[in-house]
Image (tube, rainbow over all chains, first blue to last red; front, side):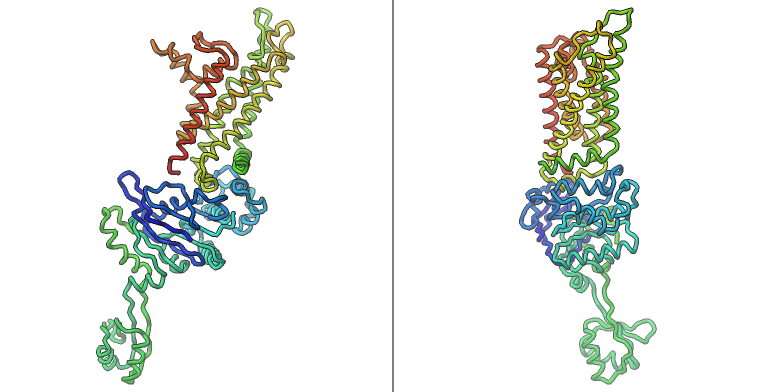
Length: 308
Length: 250
């Protein structure tokens, strides 16, 4: 488990991370969501001991990162795939990291194979495309076979095939019981990858809940109903407590306040012929915007551009 | 510490630039001694060649090459971003700089000894026997030892400067300009120059190797004093570098 306790980071007079507390559990992919500049990377850097918190603490397995023996075998991280010396080969890059944490040399070839870089292992990393660098970055993260994975926007620069690939890897690692903490500003991607969400904006915690709960809780779900005799059905649904909205073509209703099951039962009671009952989900984007609106109001206009 | 040292060794040897620097070091270390040995043969003049003359390339431009290598070895990690991976792998950051110092300091000291061991007989071979001054292994122990210590200390100094400034361009400029321009400029400052000159680090390093005061500087101590002074200065800057990387956000 990763525990973040009252973590705060000031850069000068600017508070980038503001009294953040949450936990990241093993066995699931936890998405770390927020607009650009929300403090996601800074939080990850503090977990890894790269940045010193102004106050508060981050623990991995109850220990500070600095106190972990052979930390790469415990925590794998991909914060920036360009952190490679361009003149060094991919294999040499992994070799020094492996040596630094007393890992066997064969582990280098194993992870190169795992990320599909075996053929270019002897090529200089400076010649790699962003997608290849991203794969090398993931190889660095996986090198120590760690129980904890911290990935900062790992789909950055990957082609659609690569995105599907990394999504599968993250799910597989979580299914193996590892703790996977992955940041993104791409909400749609998180909806497909993550089980749990930690959402921050302007350095503050907005939500810490399952993806489904986040959507259900933040957006207003509605149900579209198409039926032969809308008049009779409308009357019965209103009596049952729904608020209705007649859709433009006059052939369907948008129902708020009742579940699909309840609508079906009302329709059966009044003998209405129903063609379609369709649950219209609020999107993750909507949920996110609704959740962060309040927080973003505190920020100046130019800072509040939300990348979604 | 062994694992950190091993990682630094892979970092050093996996870059072609390190080998190029090593080749330049070898070339410069030997070329100056050979040149001196050739020049003393000039019958029109009455020069002799000694151990310090034979090893001039090591303490001159050879030393500068080692310092450039040291400055680049740490600053390229900041330039490429690998310093953060180093810190992730070794969160006790002082170990990283210590390993770099141990490794590259060892390389510098060994390189200096090897080059001296080659340069001295080479000079003896090239220079006419009657032009041999204090030349030969019999009396070279002090010179070679001082060279080894100075080269190792110079590497520590360069690593410390690199860790403090982080920029490759700035660090390389400092270590190249220091012996060539910085120290002689300070020494020639009106009024204060002659008082500051005996405290300039590289001037003391040269005093420590040759035992002679260059440019008529009036030192307050002898050969051993100069050597100790430079070593202390280098270690102080190196420790300041360690303090900086431990304290800063990466």
